[in-house]
Image 1: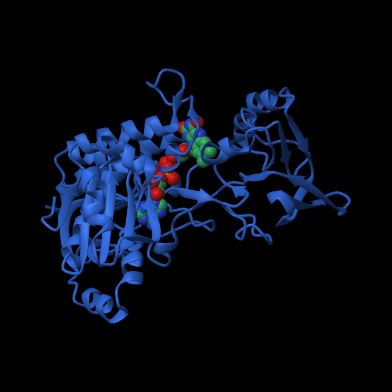
Image 2: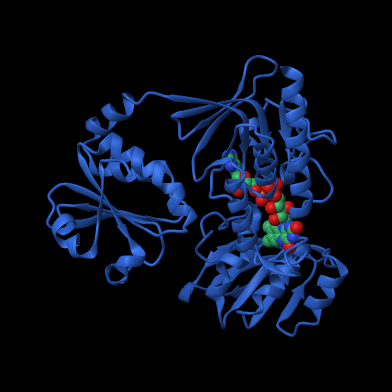
Length: 435
Ligand SMILES: Cc1cc2nc3c(=O)[nH]c(=O)nc-3n(C[C@H](O)[C@H](O)[C@H](O)COP(=O)(O)OP(=O)(O)OC[C@H]3O[C@@H](n4cnc5c(N)ncnc54)[C@H](O)[C@@H]3O)c2cc1C
């Protein structure tokens, strides 16, 4: 632990935090907690930078449960900010980014003081054999193979590792997991194996720049605006994110009644009625999952037949809690009284408009690749997916693309890990040939 961070116990809370003048930051952490591990170096870095102006404390949540409960701290890590003994700003939890810590500190310090400290920060540079951007199944597999081949490997992720798998309720088709495994558990095991292989994971960071050398020196990625990681090989594994419908109310009510993740939000609809937009595999499978909580799930699909696989469709249509409105598209989302959602629909055959009221809306209409940082730098198809050959090579020597981010027909965890394996083995051969 950095010398600017002091560990306290519940007995010291009053003295060190509540009776302290000035700004104090307190981190409730736990052991065996990946987001706590991801936060630790960032917290230390902030303590080094701001330790002369702000007091940084840590408290071990498991040994100080009573205090944690009293303060309403129910997840680790939770970072709380105080000024003159009073809690201020926003509590930070989960995969906390350095930019979030900085934003809270910026609000508490005089602006010229904060600006001066940030201005004087030097950009750090690290070099490695292989940098992997994205820690889903594809990126983590590439990291395991590369590290086991004794290549110096750094994996960076804008979130905590795990990718789409970590927020998938159940995975039933991934070999070796005993029929059905919870998504978070599979993701956690992949992360543990990646770390144990010797790869370094830098999670929950802001990636603002990816520079592709194009035969000229090293590739590089800029982390949190202050760490440049240079590498001989770059493996792009940033996956994909849910496609938006882009209609009024969607952005406005995302997280306030509109969700893209049944695993994450389904539990909030116990005993309620929800609407699912979409008709492919994700929409149909997640609708079935949502019936564990919701009393009624209405699927709205633009065509007159669902497009998921036959088994999923059969299961969904046999479920008495699920009904389907075919040939209809949503046109507007609104919140009405008692936090209910109002959906304006257009019938695609008659073009007549109707409305539907529900407690929540889940949208599953496909994915878009996370390739915006690569605009103009690498070959993509018209949908933005990266073009590779069967060795996962892009059009740039030493740059590989793996998993859902690349042009391919089947986007699954199993195909993503296959891509990751190939890219790492080909990277090894590429580095050999470059010697
Ligand atoms: C609801 C749902 C259910 C599914 N069920 C199954 C199933 O049962 N079986 C199955 O095999 N597959 C399933 N899939 C598909 C499977 O999850 C994906 O095919 C797989 O996760 C793709 O892996 P990936 O590593 O390519 O990308 P992802 O899993 O998308 O991981 C990409 C990673 O990159 C990170 N990232 C994104 N942008 C950046 C950036 N700019 N900088 C740094 N990091 C970045 C993300 O945070 C993420 O961690 C499901 C998907 C969904 C959405």
